Image 1 (cartoon, rainbow, N blue to C red):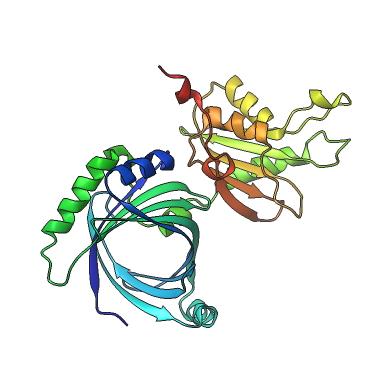
Image 2 (tube, rainbow, N blue to C red):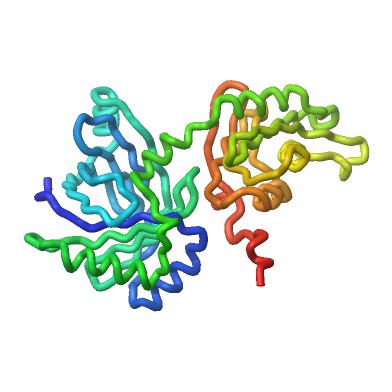
Length: 306
């Protein structure tokens, strides 16, 4: 086990990773490639404990404590290299239980040699930006706070973009609305799909809590059919409109039923890139994703401004 280490951290939502990358490189950061990470969080009495499995790289057990604030925060952590992650994961799951699993692709950059910039695409959550200024032993952290402040300014990270807690907290908080899941499943059961025999239901929840559902409606003249997501968005517009905060797509399929390309763009009109989209069958949630994952480099209403 390593000695306890510290860093000063900042986490924010990042709707435009390409722009952030450009700004980071302009500020002098150096790119170190893309890492694919799977973090398994375990239920522990104090602090947090996660097993990180990383490609390229290896596995590391990470124990850490930090406040769950949106501002700059100090993290105390210990790293333990792991040679048999599967066995350790099974042992910890059996004794402590798993809280959450977070999968992400992380673009790593280094700035001023000791500040890590993480451009993260997190499965089911969207895209984020992390800054980690690694503290030297005995540091009073003044230098590290200054580095984070200067880099935050260079990357134009607004207060509204700051995020509290960890990705695991967001995953746990992102459990689908049970009423919305039920509406999507009911809609699928009432779908009109005599030609494909592939019923689909979709349900959307607005930021102020209203819920609307729709089903796919097929037609003998095939171009005249309508997808479930389009039906749900039509119901939303008829019911007063608003911003979509959550989406459920339901189908009795052994494969994931994701929105088609056209419906991804339809959702983009009413939903932010980090809005959760839950893909379910009649029994369970199969996967939670987001528009950021389903529709990368997307075009939305804001691109018409100016």
